[in-house]
Length: 216
Ligand code: TYD
Image (cartoon, rainbow, N blue to C red):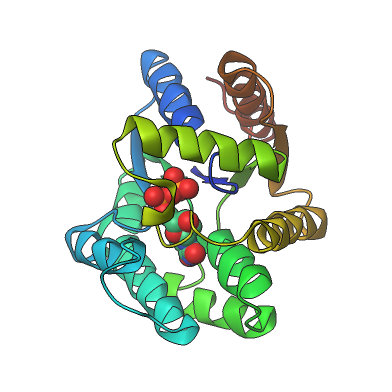
């Protein structure tokens, strides 16, 4: 089973993914927790280029192809082999991040992006996508807090320093994507405390497992 986590900055998806992974592992599930960008050695180099806003001025199209290169290698080297060996894969960001950020956020054509995603992944689509939905001001505040605790300033990440309007477009995009594919997406109210968010994620996973005739 392939599960992805999506959401704006500060939505808490990385924490939710970690908690869910721990829970599923305790239940004896063989799983891999990974992320984009940076889930494989090539991607870790690309991640540095992509996310360090001071490193390079990268135009939207170059940025897009760096994310896609990361994804193509990550799928080939990490995700597909894990799924083929029977592991459950939890991935923090995947194809919907490109649609939300480069499509709705940067204004690139979403149909074109879908085709590129298809090429990069060889058509590998998640079984379940957990969208951690949080109001933009709350996400920005949490991301700022996280950066402060990590000793960086809010403006150091390429996307953290984008305008509020950019994040509003990304969030709206995610909601449209979830409406377009309600059977794949579960929308999680991520403004709740972390325990509640994790429980909502867990019940979405249990639901899909039941549908597949499996159990946790
Ligand atoms: P990261 O530090 O992993 O942030 P987060 O904890 O919010 O996931 O940075 C990933 C950033 O890259 C995030 O701002 C979203 C952006 N991104 C894209 O714009 N397009 C993509 O396809 C992916 C995978 C990420």
